[in-house]
Structures are given as structure tokens and as C-alpha cells.
Length: 246
Length: 261
Image 1 (cartoon, rainbow over the protein chains, first blue to last red):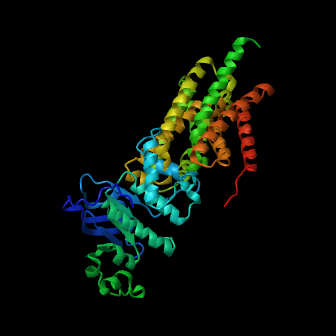
Image 2: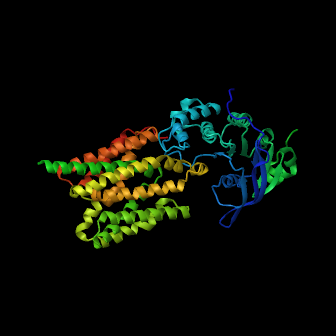
Image 3: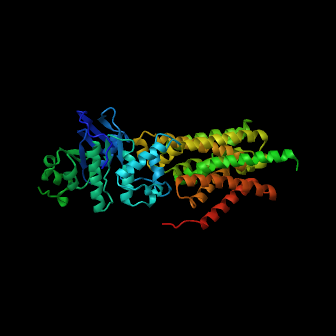
């Protein structure tokens, strides 16, 4: 694979993100409480937890979409690409893939040539052909939309990618290749990746750090050390017990 | 028919077409954001503004513009503060203004305020309306990418610091000003409809946002031009004639509706 992106440079020592005592409240409802963790450049951090544990809320706080208490400190020059679970509104819009991707351009109109070249290049790197550009977002399959959202996120060369439950609603074969794609992006571009997942298999295979979340931080560290059977039971309850084979 | 009347008619036609161009471009966002009903109700806010302006001897268009922009700011503010959809906010707050407006506007002016009178548009009105409508159109085009992004994915917009709130506020203000511009032409009651009809008709023919915008403004201009010509020829009231033309366009577009999922 040709690869003219920057490799992980190792030049940046120290954390790319530090979070201290992060709390988020919606009205009187406590959604996140006193979360602290840090992430180094080039890490793959998996964030796991049951439904309603506050995983997506944590992402939104990290990007600055919602108000919070505590401290979120990104490295100063960091560029973040965000891949949401879905788009809130595609049905009534006739937006094509091309039109959608152009919306990330800084130019409000004209001067699209360079940006289109970048779009074509990034589509290729997520495994989509440029035929998809003229198709409407609402006619894409779940897996195609996912890749288009990833393309959006990696346009403009971010240092960090935040993936919100990248596999929700994608079939198993698609799921596997999405994670291989993530791994490629991580290896080829030295991206720091945050991924929300509910699948512990994914955590063991792809992440070098894990944050278990259920309003509070339940565990944090390398998956094999942090994710003890006891932790998993605490996180998901006994019914969802998962036994990891070594 | 002498030359002077023809020149004046041409100016009236042009003011109508320019207003319709801006309205039908803005209308795409009204339809996409599902605030068609809201846009109709918001246009009623113009009426008390016009009533007050008439009482104080100002141009009613100015009174309407002030009230509409204030209403747009109020909608934006309330929507930001609550999670209610725009429909319910606008419906709750502004339907009452129609009643107040009817009380404020003198009887002889009421019909014209509600339905406009294109043929009473003066030379100086036209010279005001045409450039203002052109400016509103240009500003909307400039805003359109940010606005589209803020509708399709507010989180993504926020994540690249594209300020979706500001884009939406800009849209509401342009929308309000455009209604004010159209009041002399086809009246406050029908201006809301002019913003929606070209876009809903265009949607049935469109295959992308770009085609949606293009077809909508073509329809907007055609609806206005045909409506005015029909009104002149048959001596109809122009406002209703324009709107009925728009509805005809919409009904014809239904015949071309692509398969629904």
C-alpha cells in the first residue's frame, strides 16, 4: 500500500490527552462522575461499558460539545476527527456523499478542487470507490455510511480519531474489516484512536488500553491487567459474563 | 399601453422574481429542517409590526422587518434553551400576533397587508426590493454549506468549530427579512407559502442538494412570473394568483414523484 502519510513520530512524548475529575450532569441527573485518565500519542483506547454508561457523553465532552466540570487537556496543536454513531438527519436531505464530504472544507464555496482530490484519496484509503460520490447518503448501506463517516473524520489529517461504537448495526464480516481499517489507520498514520465498543473481543484484539465506564471509572489500564473477571462482572452483571480465553 | 407602464410592470415583475429567488432558496432549508408550518406562522408576526408602523407613520415594510427579526431572534433563543421542536415554540408564541395585528391594522389596509398588492409597488419600492432580495440570496448561498452541515450533523459541525448555532441564527434572520420584503408584493399571509411551495415541488425532481437548490429557485422564479402575468391578464389579485400557480406546480410535481421507500 502506498503511504505518504506521516508515520508515528515518537517525537511527542507525554500524553496527548489528560482528563481529571471529569463530571457531566444533565439537569439533576449525574451522567459521568469524577473520571480521570490519560492517553499517550499513538495509543488505542477502548471505552467499554453497558448501555447508558456515559460513553458517548464522554466523547461529546472530549470534543467540547457539552458543558462539563473538571479538566480536559488536549495537547495544544491536536486535530480531532470524530466518527459519530449515525447522522441525525439524512432522510429529508438529498445530500450526496460528495456534497457531504465537501461540507468539511473550510471554503464556503468554490475552491473545491484540492479538497476533491483529498476526498478521492481518503475514500480509497477506507476502501470505497469514487463511484459512491454521486450517491445520496440516505441510500447507503449501514457499512457504506460508516466508511463515509470515517472518510469525513480523516479528511484534513487529524492526529486523533474518536469512533463511537463503530460497529453498531454492521454485520460481522463488515465489522471485521472496519476494525482492520482502524488498525491500518493506526499503524500507517500513527493516529491515536479512541473507540467505544461493547465487544470485549475487539478490546483484546485492537486496544492497548481500556477504560471501563459506568458513570464512574471502574477500570483503566492494559486490557489484560485491567479487565479482570471480577471487573467484567461488575461492569455488565453476571448474565453478560464473558470469559476471555488466553 | 404606453412605454411608462410597461417599464413599471417590468420592475414589478423583477421585484417579484428577485424576492421569489431568495424565498425559494431559503425555502429548501425550511423544508429540510421540517419547519414549513413554523415558517407560515412566523410570517404572521409581520402583521402587528405593520399595524404599529402605520399608526406611527412609518413604512409598514420596516415595521414588519423589525417585528420579524425580533421574532426570529426569539425563536432562536427559545430553541437553544429548550428541546422543544421549532413548530411548537413558534406555534405557541406567534399565532396570537395574528389576532393582535388584525386589531392594530386599520381595516382599509388589512387586506393589502395580508395579501399584498403587487401592482401598487412603486418605482422606489422596486429599487429597494430588488437589491435587498439579491443580497439576501447571496448571503444565503454563502451560508448554505454551514447551514446544511448544522442540519445534517450538528455534532460534526461543532467538532470542526463551524458554529451551527450561528448558521441557524443567520438563516432565521435572512428568512425574516425576506418575508418582510415580500409583504408589499404578495402579503404576509402568502409569503410563508412562497417560501415553501417551490422547494416542496422541487424536492420531487431532485437527486442531490445542488439540484434541489437549482430546481427550487427556477420554480420560484417561474411561479412568481407566471402568477403575475396571469393576474395582470385576468385582472386577479396578484398574491393569490402567485400562490395558486405555486400549488399547480406542486401538484404537477407529484406526478413525477420518484418511488417512495
